[in-house]
Image (tube, rainbow, N blue to C red):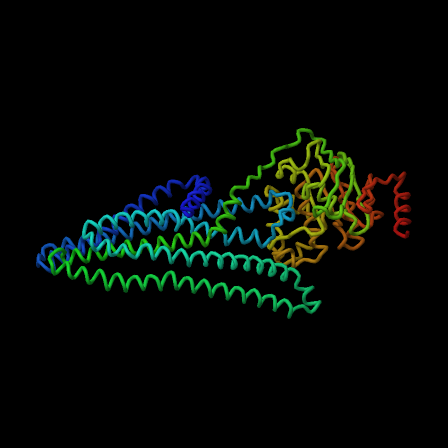
Length: 574
């Protein structure tokens, strides 16, 4: 009963996701009914063949028998094809919807760290767990209904043919279900252990590949290999247990039942009934075929319930994911002031941990050129991620045009804000594809202009494939300076009202850096430019300067650029 309630609850959670393809679900139910009818027709054809054609010698019936048999084969093939087609449409639609929701929710969350959710766990949710949901739709819904219908129809027909033999055949049902239940409960534990091991191994593998240089430099190769062997050892043990359970459930129990019931009881008792004239040979054959149908239905029914028990932890995770409701942000500022303000903002990465920033109050207005500077590790990068809405303040709020940034529609927000971060991700694609991804409606002339402004155009044109050059995963074919210039070109192409640059020229030589500053200086006077640097004296276009020190942000007032340079050089010497 517990299984049935869980199955029904899971169907309820996934059924809304089938919007647009529910007609395929209905069609599958109809096809299932036709398939059941064809299953029960075949033994009747055999009965006519044996009783009428072979035993009674009515050869005129052979043509009808052959035509009926071929017709059933053809209909079965058509139903099978349509069934597979509808199943694929349903499964692909469901997998897309579920994976799209999990990925979308992951992006909409304020922080993965706060939910203690690892990259490996999200990957396992999207791939392995969702595949279990696909199996659920196949096995636990459509096929499960077919099993129930087969069981009921075959049971009624067995009793109509010979109720004494039907009672004998029914003896094995409770024993089969009981042993399957015991084995499946043990299998459930092993499946969960194996899934947890897979998750840990995926997380370890991801971290090891990301940090392979450090592992090599520290001589940790043997240690990492030992870790890998530990994961493989656990994997092998779990799969050994799973194979053992499979053999017991799917081979040993059915073999015992077949030898005892089929060969000893049914054949023996059926033979006696034929001698007594209570059955014909054809009727015995039909009884055996129907018994095989009900027997297979019981075995599959038991195995299906056992599989469900084993998959309950995985399906529970999917149900919990589907139950999450993260409402999309809808607010859009109506004013065009583009004023960015931070009001009593504080931030810490871990609850109860060190406060990285405290009581930050800043107002940045249209046309401001801001320099934020300070020593490494003081919180500069954290500050701009708060400004851009990437991080959510622990206390206080960040506002754009008077509206809290956490409630602003994200598509609108990142059209308004352009970011060049120290660790901006580059994908394995061509330069042109990257720039079109940033600004899909850009013209070739606009792309070339942005690349020229970012001092990237000449470099691109000297490449054999030009804008078609593939930059590799995370820009592995580019130097640090080239990556920064390409990212800057993308943000200039986007034309955001607010441009935030985090050490955006730290990989450039002095001449290139000065040229980039000149380009930034000539941008539209209404745009806000926020520049984070260790070397504030190099940034000549700024009109406001903020020092980040020990988590405190303070505005520094200067009468002239020369005073600014003098004070900052003195601060650095101190």
